[in-house]
Image (tube, one colour):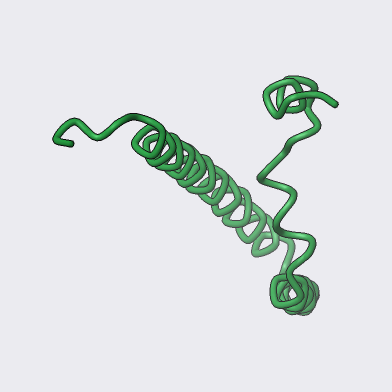
Length: 92
């Protein structure tokens, strides 16, 4: 059995995709978003569709940046907690 670091190296650990697909609430919300996206797309002119797609692209990019920053922060926080738990207390 490989260590978690080896699994991460080989691409077998992918936290940004693992948690989304299993949550019923997220699946339901994604369905609503897809439905509304389709409905709105049918109502728009070609120029409006172009603007809407640019908006979606920008929003997706912003979401990716936010998810990355949250992941890095949480990983660092978790590591700091693990270090504190494993190191002897300085004032003992």
